[in-house]
Image (cartoon, rainbow over all chains, first blue to last red; front, top):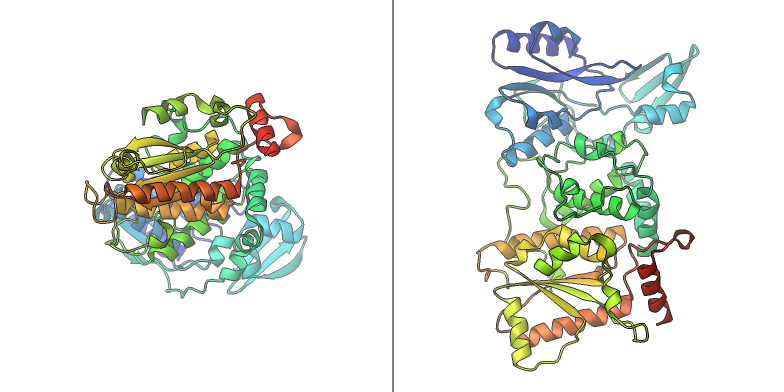
Length: 316
Length: 179
């Protein structure tokens, strides 16, 4: 898969069919990867595809000029389709190199299971449903559902729907919603006061670094409401009240664009369970309007379209 | 609208409860966003036809229910209003053709999402009131006020830790507790 990607990317750049390629290269830390954006054909040798390609590359698309080739897992392809729906990128300017994705390994989960830092691990390898971790010469086996990201467990589209070149065998989706939705189910058991209190607790950790917003492919406003000063909707100081309002509004803004790619939760430096917000919003949108974001590039965006009769039970 | 923006400029220093005298019984404060073409005229009609409805509502005139941003609702709750009412033309009657359809989608999402987060569902209500429905407007405001009386004062954004409350807010809370 990796070899094929390198060949295709090189050919596309050399034939001047594209100006840029967005992909992944090996990161500076063990097991990590980092986005690679280049117009140099020689750099394509650095492109990688492995079980650690976490970033959602679609977030770079709105800043790119010219024709772009992008390496896209299922979740990226959905984000791209969502951007096409919103007229943020043009389909004809894109070459989508589809990667059928078996799920991305969450290093934090492995660290927790093994009880060691990632630097102390010798090797992590994946074979089908089995993930083996080598520590001090000893091999430990885990099932994939134990070490994959929660959002990967809930994945509905491992193989991109929208692509120009598919780099591997198509994969069938097998969402394990029970495992990935544990947090939300637990929250729903609580009373409303307890739920609010739990969000107060979580959001009081927030340092307002805006990593969640910056990494989000659906957050493409030129100017974010948190930076407005006239009127100042939320205080820039990290107080839980304003942090919570920021997250609520952010989720409402990306409703119908958010594809539950889980990037916000992954990048959060203080581990706020943001996916419990985004996933619930995703489910609300699906339940009320039968709308799944990023599935159909010809569909109208959620907030543009409407039906004559819908959600009437919520109105007096 | 100007009033609301002024409230927003003042940030959190504004306390809707400060308008009440300490002795009075706690009364919910309701903020209403009424569409200029239907609901506002409906409220007008309720007044001119001498329908009685609680004076708990503060009305802000908006051009269309589609103008109501999710930020308005959250900001109102943050400022300490006990509830928000959004009211517009009946579906199909929008002066701008589709404004209230969009509002319907948006409000539905906000309502469900806030409910999930732990905001009592009664705090955000929405209704369709046409210009000829003065009676319905009075009814809606009465019902919503009744709902808010049942759920009690809005303490969502109160600071609870170590008694580190601001003066105005702790007074408001104390007042609410006495009731």
